[in-house]
Length: 230
Image (cartoon, rainbow, N blue to C red; front, side):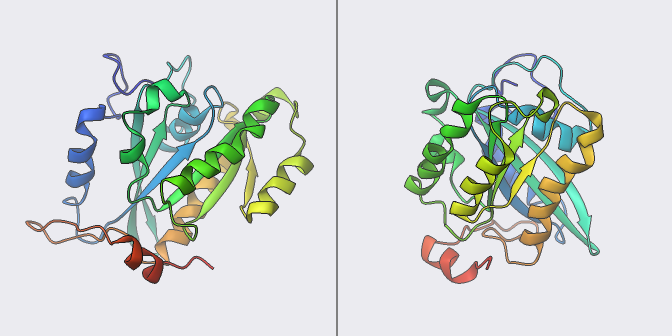
């Protein structure tokens, strides 16, 4: 769904407000840790519907094309600790992404790559999306997950065996699901919970600060030293 559209979901933020939303989130509760997850893939693979299913527990009918970045967040309680996931869904079309791409990849804690199981081209383009992450210095040791969406359409053009080979080549976990099928809600939740549990057990790149202070991102060198998701 479009981040800049007038009829955008009230839970989403406009492009110009994303920094203020991210900063405001650090003021919620000192005990809450905040993690930024980016969702990447071609247009029309269901990235927005996937994040909406997780955050709103329902399917988003007739979503508009994302322009720039669509932003959602959800707070989870894991082991007595509050974990806030900030989920950034970028436009799949290059013409909508150019102005936001550097900001989008900044201070990322986890990456979800999405393809459409009924569209072979969206799967074949995954290596390009993975390479884009690396070009923008997303640390290799942050968690990456591969998700095949739209399983409600059948196995389509991308068999599980083919997807598993690609996932294994990058050492990524593979999930196959459907954002549309209500029966798959727990499976969609499992994708994000997998990341949340993994992130919870490691220090975030950006740490929660007391009220009145600011959060300082770690440098790239510090990220490499602090983070290890082995």
